[in-house]
Image (tube, rainbow, N blue to C red):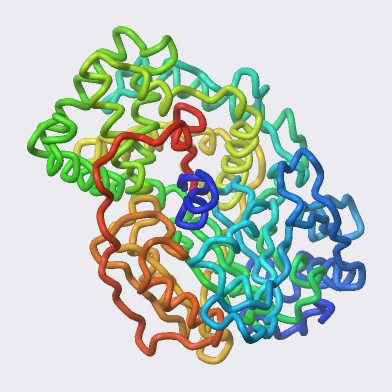
Length: 548
């Protein structure tokens, strides 16, 4: 399920016991995939015990991580295959900023340390290595006072046993087309590309490819918990991080201290991942409409149309011109769509994208080139993230293997949600031709008293992870509470501009208290129209780095 990898509120502020679990640590799971009694579960217990004994040797971060000296880095060792814990081992990279012990509201008194807060930004395919830097941001200083902030790169990502499916030199293509209603010949071209990509994943990774999936990400998280010396885990996952965080809560409920799920992937096993992606495309259509309504409201600034339909006509005019003559030889309709998809994730992109479109239609293509052209320097990172995304989602669950099913479902959806439907389909189509075995999705579910109370955060109009996913997770995790930002759609709301949301986050992480029946927060203010401030909001690939 594609979602930006990952900016969220956290990313926007930064840039773009030995774990020997008792046999009953996951009540009711013996018959579920990976539950107690399975070889994988026994392997995870052994791996966590080993990691707890070894710990993590934190030291200076390697130069290739490009992290400041204020952070310390280390590695944790996990089995490639938990069913064979004595077999091949891989190392996951970890970063940490120790708790400051300071309370910005009461500088005279030292704050008691509460342990480590582990964060995952989503993807699949995103690295959390930069996360500990968030502690310098005002919205995070109270949490940083009480917790060591810990980020890590999941298996396959960055230097953590990296995956690759094609030569990064050939990863970015541009300019490209992005038809909302593709021709049969265009479809055949994309089918061929999807088959080649799936074949490349298999050839470049071999038998190891099958071990990159969400259940193993959850098991890795428990090994990391043990290596950090934590009897129980305090975890915050955004977007895709909510999915394998929910798997963790189901597999290891007795190992949970506190968990925050920010912008929730729907965990219903019947939707993982094919149906979830269709739902995502439908939700992006509504968010695309929100963006166009905002631009129309500021027609005096941008001149793109006084109505949402008028803004759409301006966008389509630009797409047609770019199809005939790509901007700077790099930006075609595909790159345009990718850049504007990011506006569906984060409304702080709205002024910059609107300005770029306006300038382009007035004869100045440079802002659009700056924001939408592929960043070739990031090709290796982007290719790695895409490979991990594809491997995890394709491995996680069965996908339709008949092109006729994909064609039928996406043709039907594109009639009402043309903006992202086919682009999302092409992103996931390699899963139709995947050569590795599929996992059976875990039925995420905990009963009363099995899991400590957890906090769920969601924006009502989130396009990347539709709001129904938050409602579903609340239903499945007994005792959880949902905080909703009403009337807003930014993807990832923890630690962002909404002080109501942040107050609930602080209260929960610092005291463990949840709002009794959840809570509603008014939306954060809409962005103000403005010209871009530079290249900081440039797209990473000319195609939005989607991910959940």
